[in-house]
Length: 245
Ligand SMILES: NC(=O)c1ccc[n+]([C@@H]2O[C@H](COP(=O)([O-])OP(=O)(O)OC[C@H]3O[C@@H](n4cnc5c(N)ncnc54)[C@H](OP(=O)(O)O)[C@@H]3O)[C@@H](O)[C@H]2O)c1
Image (cartoon, rainbow, N blue to C red):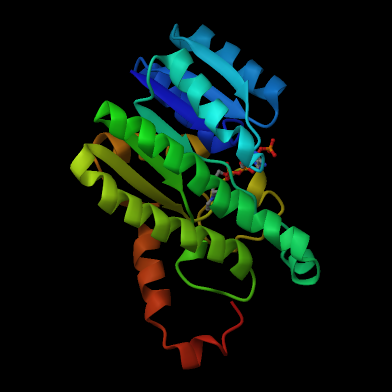
């Protein structure tokens, strides 16, 4: 069995790589920081005695995406599981003033994810099997003044993955959408999370692995976020726009 991790140096993604390797999967670790991915690959090989190969992957280099997926498929002899983990919060204040900053957030979180997902979908459909996992966010469930740009890209990604799941079901390819709340990673370092519990990367990785294994469609991390976001989505817009969330 084999797994491709895109954005492998994310703390959550690296734990997912270890989790699949522990289950006997060979892994390709694709990341923009090649040296960091190589160190991770060495660690995975040492701990789990599987094949682990690092390759360079820049989500915004769209023209290179086909070669990255082809290389991963060749190294692994076919991709059984793929995790699209890369993402970037961006600087919301800067993005309001410079569209180039806004475009980067949109491209990394949405356009690049769509680009690789389409390539992976074609690969998996040709093999008649596969599991495609995309990490969206609870931020995509309702637009809020504090992070609506990032949230809109993640919301679009979740909608895209929903459609892809609908399309690929008949082909034996499963699509899992992951919607985390707060996780303890570089993305949230320095962010005031109030009294909301922050999930460890290890717990997040285990939950993602298990959700994929049982064929879940959409999973909130931790699960209580499904209730919270259900409540937040139910607030009438006339009231919600007055709340400074
Ligand atoms: N942490 C949270 O609370 C939270 C909540 C909801 C959803 N998420 C989502 O969870 C996923 C994993 O993030 P994380 O929390 O583990 O944060 P993270 O450690 O910041 O991981 C994000 C990863 O994306 C990579 N990345 C950024 N731009 C890239 C590019 N142009 N090309 C290739 N890779 C790029 C980063 O690489 P470099 O660090 O080398 O730039 C990093 O490895 C992301 O999709 C994130 O949006 C996180």
